[in-house]
Image (cartoon, rainbow, N blue to C red; front, side):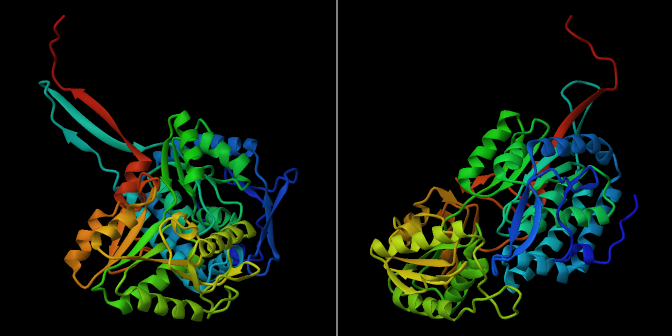
Length: 495
């Protein structure tokens, strides 16, 4: 299958993105309504994309079903080759794709680098999945029988991806699904249809992926998203987003017996014990709270700090937060870019204002200019205040004191979420003892909560989702076991 030649212009900000990608064709669909995609830093129109309908999603699933069996029967080395080529193209056009991340989603340079580099690593790792679908041979209790267990692709994977880290969080599902012989219908977020969807279609098209194996439908969640989740031809629904929406997506998936792979919200604690290295704890706290403006499911939502270190930690964190450069993500020195839209900004500001009304002290920040929200540090916070008990999803750092390790654990666990956490202590054994009692799917000792690696499981406990992404864990989600027995000699039956 030939690769599509490209010079990189089709990945640029100036490329034409006004089309759906279905069955290997770029469908311009002039009869569809358009969705405006704005640059959140400038509020200027970046592009328009089709507002896909349920009928468009149906077409995408039809193409995916038709293509899947042939793709599953393709040799593992050919599937791996296509995925590796997509990874190489992603690497080759880093500059163009990072500019897209800046313009469409407000990703500052640090996020561009981490998101792009992580996406490249994820796709390269996914290429190996084509050769990791190993089965097993089992003995039988019946004489002369042989049991063979094969690992096969699920079929069609529906992917519904978010706007906050759109390229990485889309491709971490798309690439493994393709490598393991599935076909895909991808519905990216309405705020980031290009970096979360259409650019991925162009990468795999250029890599030589057969028609219909990957289909991308842009559109509102209430139409294209709901139909993607509820479509009877989906065998897996991979969703990343809020817990509220994830519940609905999971219900839709289960209604037609699709496996829901749900990575949902978090309220992640950063615990600083009294013997912690304060420099390291503050460094970690700054990055974990303010990377990508806090718009990350695994960002630090609450700083739980021992009362003996509380004042100094708060002072240092506030000083560092006030110094972070705010500006256009295309500027090299920018650290804090814009919030994605007005709705998210207003919710963040509301949480801050309510928390101050409830008795907290605003140490720094709290204001905004357009969609740029100042890095904000709050002291005198309790666990039930608005910015602490909710997933604020912004550049906000509520600091809560505690007096004992037991109290720290109790505060950390006093949430419906269980996604990520971090614990700092000079005594790594003590830190591990505290960490082991905190109910999260991902815990980091003497670090912060924003950590992702392609070969370790990513996911949460409680209301933070179900299933795991990455490595052997996503391989389990996107494939299933099939048992074949072979009777190699005549068998006697009781009647």
